[in-house]
Length: 340
Ligand code: KG4
Ligand code: ZN
Image (tube, rainbow, N blue to C red; front, side, top):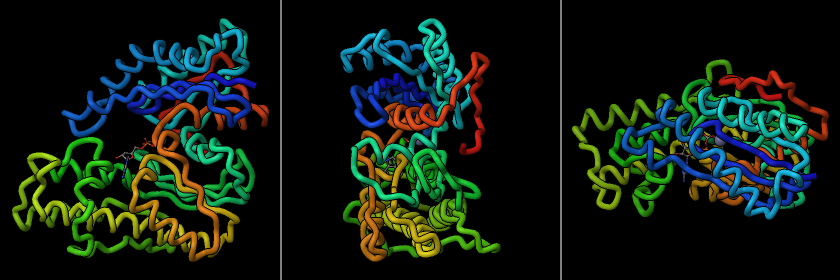
């Protein structure tokens, strides 16, 4: 069964053709990062306008790369939410239009379900139940997957997502947007023990995350010492590089502390690490050490499936379709949407 999947929840216009939920025939991602970079973050209206311009060419390219036309598509899937509403509406409407005229089933997909199903795109044998750490610009969650398509939310961020904290701290340090890759780059080889950032504790003991504290701690550090933002990524001064490295270590430590606690309690058979921040080499490395300690296999999708893409929406759409999920022609996008 061949799915055409469309993803437009944030600043990537993406389309993919995925066969039987696992064979990726094409995966086209048109990033708007350069467009939003001067603003230090995603400007929602600009994002929507660019999705409108790009979505049809991106779909055409996805069909072309897969060597199929719409006659050979069986199902259309689109990210219904959560995300930026103006961006989501573009993908939902274009998918609805295609499904409507071709008389195809239309499957709505939760963006985080996409990130959760991404590790399965490599065809690896993943033992379930799995415990997943989803870390992106919009989400930081610990989710248990007893079966494909079944998701239990065990912990989440109470304020900023980890990627959002990377983006805000990078902006503060003059490192540009997107912040995660910029911080990772300047942190390489720097002293990640220069500053100790405390891991936020939850007073109710829940395995939740909080990243607004570390972001504010960086702000105070910079202000109290009169540290000027870097003028460019390539010659960031040592104070900024050490600060970036210490911040990165603080975030990685906080993420893995909760992952360890919940893994010890839930005893899953494997660990999944997914979402844009999973591109971070320090996080991947430390997560592998943790998995080794726990004696569990760790599955991290390749980079093209960790950051936003439509192949993961195709994988999640396949599972949802198999479970009988169908949208009506009144399908709407939802900026906030609970996990199915
Ligand atoms: O999954 P994603 O592409 O979009 C969302 O669903 O949000 O994640 C984007 C986020 C951004 O905040 C970006 O700064 C972060 O992932 N990110 C990274 C790295 N690459 C991307 N964070 C840390 N290290 C990286 N190498
Ligand atoms: Zn995402």
